[in-house]
Amino acid sequence: MTFPARFLAWWETVTWYRRILLIAQLLMILGFAVALSVVRGRPGFAYGDAVLLPHAEGEDTVYAGRVDGERAAFTVSPDGRVGYTWGDFVYGPYTVREDPSAVPEEYDWTRGVEIREGDQVLFRGGYTGQTYPPLFTEAGEAHQGDISFTTVYSNGEKTVYSSDGEPLTAEDLHAPGPAVLARLVLDPALRRRGSVSLFLLVTLLAALNLAAICFPNAFFRLSLWGHVKNLEEAEPSDYYLFCTHVGWLLLAVIAGVLYWRVVFSLF
Image (cartoon, rainbow, N blue to C red):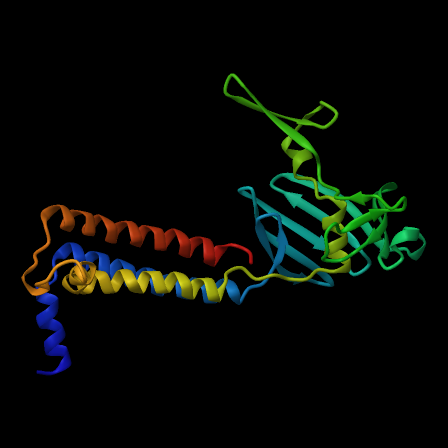
């Protein structure tokens, strides 16, 4: 009997529940494999949990994407000017320039940088690059540039307060910090979403689930190996069959969640 004939004969013995799970699991593996190849081929600027994809507009470089559900874009000019939009809010323009005189004495290995918004100096000190913390002030103190805030819920409403006790708006919370601006101009390294190695590990889990769905009797006897004498005469109980069917579904769902996290998260 040829392989196609043997496969068709076996397929006729498979229940509809198992068929649906098998097809769904195979489509899941294929779909996320395609998604991984797409996102890996499009590196971008990591901003929080988002990846902003770059494209050129004249001499400027624009990093665009979605941040907290809103359209966001950084526009970086060759002369160090940076503009940012988040939803309907417009920030800047900022100016980032290197200034060796801004390097802190005890951090002379850093790059001196001055960041302005118009005529206002937002930061002046040393920039360390991709290390943590990224910025040190001229006084040698670590400077994160992020807004410190506290969220308070009252009568079902959320209010966000700054460290000074002042209420903050969505516009305040999404203003880019000096560390982000410095990285955009001085060190705009692009990152890729998705991990091939973790994808393969999840695929191994999915393959084991596929094998369990395809060969339930073999896995049943394997579970009894070393516990009973006559494996060929053993039959699964209704409770065992119920737990097995639920387990297949749970493993398929878990694999889908893991695939999503592995493919669309930064690593």
